[in-house]
Length: 483
Image (cartoon, rainbow, N blue to C red; front, side, top):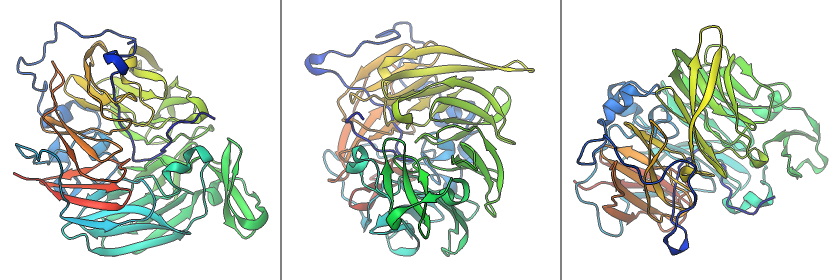
């Protein structure tokens, strides 16, 4: 198995691009520096954030995401990566920002989510996996819920720890979390009372004898984890890492198992299965829900492909092959108009045009661009352009209309999930550096790079008003943004 960085985090999706040694850039599938860009002459985004959201199938406007839901799931509202309510400073500190509070955590790489003046996150301490709530104002612990865990990933992934990587989602006063071995649970956000929970491999997997009662890696296929005395069942090779999403009454996530579907929807009030779809390997990516071609649908990367499923019943509407070695699809898809954007390890950013012909669906590759090839990172759409970071650490701006690269620059490491806040992109990389970029559709413009942690940060920050919350290896950090 290839030896490269592995972090299957439901909460790790970004796209980055970096110059090769000597100042060169890797070959591009589509275009290079473009001419004839019709964006505003001052380089500002083609539309204000609320207008961008209004055009996006995933969110109508900032008004649809009030402050108490401003960052309540993976990558914020609708999985868009847009901080609608952020109030960024005019001038950022030149080098280092100090947190106003810290809270120590165990292992894990789930990103923090915020709702009702509380920050929610998961971690692992020894044989225990936890869902925690702390005060957003002070970092004071409020409650935690624990489940037993026995899991070690394939050796290639062990440098990123054995803790949970799926980011919780908060909806209607409840927190939904998914542990690395498949503990799926619903907890009251205010009190920490467990409403319901289940162990996915026990409920939907094929049980088998587990000699010694301990988890073990099953070659390059899966990991067998305990589900009862002397019994085990398989979970993905690097555990469950995709983050669940909520749409109305449905809690939607990738499950797998002989008794389940690759993708399943559950009644969020009681955990009852509503539908299951497909019978293939799960990926490490997270599903999104969007109105696309007139139909509300779940868009998700499975092991071998990217699919659109009718959100009401899980019916397969369209699919496109997108196989990545060892089913390592990780980044989160996004939608722009009639396009679905996906990328992966050694795969170009691919724009799929989805067509609803009434009696059948069709999809076609509108364009591809190798400049935004990303193993872990996800992208963000701003107006008529998509921004992200590739595996070489370069940020890139690509025009949605034809897939042409507008600019490609910077040197920011390997991982970054950019957050769009007003006319800025906030890019937190894996070393604790926060790059603040101008949303400029003509050139790369980096006003500041600030250190926000001195330990690794394979996560996405939550930005609400003048507060920013992030998770580093040492734990949670909260920052008050200057005026």
